[in-house]
Image (cartoon, rainbow, N blue to C red; front, side, top):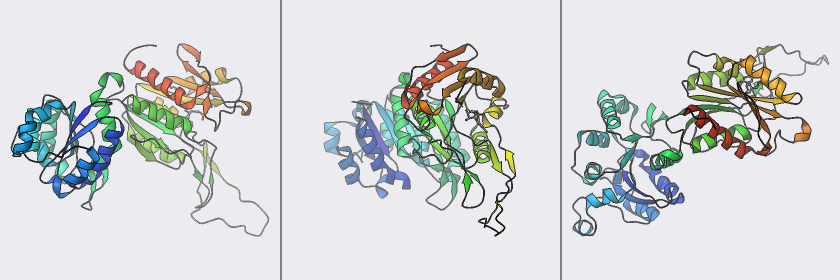
Length: 402
Ligand code: C5P
């Protein structure tokens, strides 16, 4: 994004309060921002805030003789590398769809010859209204790019689709729009599972494992960096989830299975979670107590769903399913058998025997097992492993081999 110029049109919605943060993030990536504020946008954020953060004056009227003499509105819209509308209100979307030009923002949008990216934000009923959906279809037909909206609680107290995408997600979409070729997973949806699962015994105790979530998190970030839309289904990991992905936080294996199912369809799935094999049947809803008999409690356990095996055979199976195999001996033989047993396309096999220091460490040594055999990768950082895997996934989905 370095050296690029973004013309940022700020519409009148409550999510305009996130625009100062968006401007900071865009500038942190080395791009310049020219802010344009609509009259209703000025009800939610101030010209002063935007101009201080952008380091440039805010444009807010068609009828400013000084500004028009210095740089006409046609020029303003053409000097940019990308036009971004955030928040894009129902009104702004309708104006763009109709080709209206009755204020500075709509005039710039009609006059531009650059790509336009909109981040819609409005009440869920307004978003669902056939008129808005009709306008959206028109905008997409016209080649206008969209990011969001997200689902969630709304400022008006309702719940549903219509929240503006988070600033980090908008920045990722801006990056995609500016450099489509460098982001070969643009438009692809990838599900990544990560972290351990916790299987409750009672409200305060659970069965867990030592997975940190480091490798899954690095994979989600690498896929995002190549432009993928990532659904990151994570158990209670110790490393924080990456920015710019949809985080679906779960606790148990059964919840992880349901979350993966809800995230389908997808182009690819990478199952990097260390899913518990069993859960306690009938976990107590009260804290269990010693009963004075000196006898420990007996737990009945049942097998958890195998998410990797399930998704590999699902009706809407992703084109590419990648599993992991953490082994302590006969790594290649066990992982090759696991690939066939689970029905996935690739297995990332690694030796987690204690002397390798891989479990919980920052490095990984993997062998990629596919139907063409086993390919040993040199030992490298988990970020580098993630980067290589993301490149391979992009090449596979785009029909190339490396
Ligand atoms: O069977 P095992 O745990 O060794 O297989 C490892 C692979 O299977 C990993 O990719 C893991 O994420 C996945 N897995 C799963 N659901 C399970 C168990 C494992 O998705 N219940």
